[in-house]
Image (cartoon, rainbow, N blue to C red):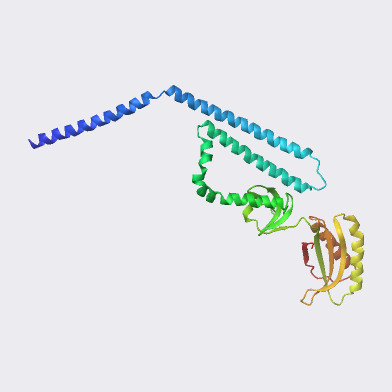
Amino acid sequence: MYFFYLSKKADTVTSTVSKQMNRQTNVLTKYFTSINWDTVLGKIISVAISIILLSIFFLLINWIGKKFIRHSFKHTKRGQHLTSNRMNTIYTLSLNIFHYCILFFYLYAVLSVLGIPVGTLIAGAGILSVALGLGAQGFVTDVVTGFFILLEQQFDVGDEVKIGSINGTIHAIGLRTTQIVDYDGTLHFIPNRNITIVSNLSRNDMRALIDIYFDPNEDITKMSKIIKNVNQELAPKYPEITQGPTLLGTIDNGHGQLALRVIIYTKNGAQYTVQRIFLATYLEELSKAGCKIANSPLNLTTAD
């Protein structure tokens, strides 16, 4: 009798669960049946086609715009007040701004096609202003710093600079980052907010100091005459030299070592070549004259 009761109770529970599952299944079936799948599918296809057409349109606008900017800068006559580096800086910045504008309008158009009320989102942005402000703080700082870098003309594309521990040539200046190509070929991306102290090595002539160390028993007058003859012979061959070469005379490095110092001012970038050629010629001519020459440390610094 007891087992019969349990069996009947189990049949009742099973029947109840089955009815509930059938009821839920009927509800889901009615829900999916009530959907107009032709309309939904048509809407999805319509939105997909619209996004594809918008993408093609903005890609075309982006290609035409960049080509127009390149063409404009290529055929723009450079005024005397604008250097080549400055023109390159304005060119890269123009491309950068154009890229961000195209991206903004493209996202706006896609969101509008998807039915997202962009205008309402923008109007209600005050609700999330604090969160957005904290998230975009670094971006805003980058843009503001980049603006003042351009306004103050701290550096241009092509300038050789030292920013922190990085030395190299400015490759591009953007709204967010500045790109520097290191002397070993490494491309550095530096956020503009991290640029605090800039040493521009391209604004002034470069000064090359050549110290030729010699034995104190050597004839200084004879060595000086040889160096002056080399200067007179080589200087006219290098138009990159802006001042000198000038023989400053005998110096003491503070450790009892005497040297004859020559100073040469050159245009930026030419100091290394000029320095190597003059030093090699000095050593060659002094050696031919029988002068005893010690090691000659080199010193290249920015002109004051």
